[in-house]
Length: 577
Image 1 (cartoon, rainbow, N blue to C red):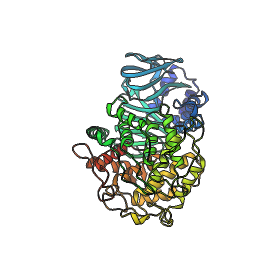
Image 2: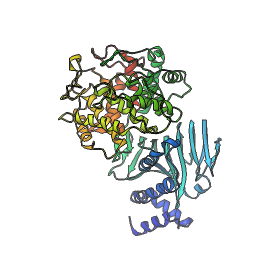
Image 3: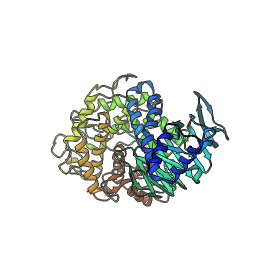
Image 4: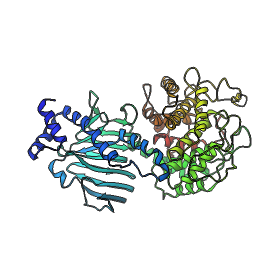
């Protein structure tokens, strides 16, 4: 970049260019990738900090009780927010985009006033659009933006720069012409797009750009990234992975939901096959199916989804799996509306922890009224020991509670972390229990699980320690997580649970790997692109009638495997977390 270009860039950022100079700047910007990268690196942080922090805007609406973790969410969102810069020249000051069509609930916020949008309405700088339960299409000179449900973004101008700050949700960006050239900016630089089709999934912790047509030039990458790849933001680095055809995934999920609808009676049938220290706790597939249907994108008005939500909220919670899955599900659907139930699940889990830091199958049922505010504190103890499978679900359930604004007794978290650190094997993996702890081991009643390292147990250990690190960032878990990730990279496979026979808790392994990858914000275990490889396997394994039946052997024979497998497959394809 020469001295003239540097001068233009600085004067542009300061808003000092007149009309002719501004036109010259845009022309130079369109033809000079180096100038675009320099613009992105100089402008992005300043614009986003000014817009999101100094002006006090939060990433997402949060209830008063969640105030303690809102600053952390803002910081996380600031690091991974995607911005779509619309360099539309002088006309942008009068009109940036126009509402071509919309459906459902779409609201435009302008000058502090919120009103429903209408077709043909101009969307200008400073406008904020929320598609809470709707969708909208915005167009302008060869640029088309399809906004999915639950998308929040704002059109902004700062020192002559115009941009769209996507805080959350889904945007399909179709860039067709030179006049509407777009730039997607990440913390590391810019993405130059021309005649490209992008799908942007923006979130406060992790965001993704799928390149479905054309190619993009990403700041920091030597070569353009062609179509068929996905760019993810949110971890320590930007990752590029293979893109799985979205329409193929959508069709697979649609057929899977139709199968679950045909088996709705099985979703609420009691399962009491697991026990260790007492009578078997009652559980059903209701929570798991509700989470899968929610992830699939079904609206709350869907009859099966509404029925399952009523079932989940209307009965007692007897099992650790039930409490954990209920917390995970309700925290995703609406953490504010279901806050009371999430706190109940948190109290059940906290009270049921074993002295050694594990959890067993059942939860303690005698729970006094749970306070509506304040920290969830321990009111009892669980049995002597449990196992790593159910313990990982308990930890993920508490993680969901915390994300919903529920503060958890630190001693519970410390015990759980201590257990996972203690039972890690020398090779970096985990087994069903601690191979050296006789109080926890129960090999006499097991024929399939082992305490030596295998895939699903190791994925559970990595995901659990990563979740616990979210509670306390400086917790001494980094080395254990690194060793676990190395084990997963060295042993990863999709045709079986690593180090186990084919069919042994196969989809529990894949969903465990998905949870570990999602919490750690990584698309790779070693050289393996876990989502692309797993999705390839699942899309080929789906039955013509929509379900999956992958589990084999005696270990899971009491379960209705096609229902369980189908729920887990949906969650994987929807990138479970």
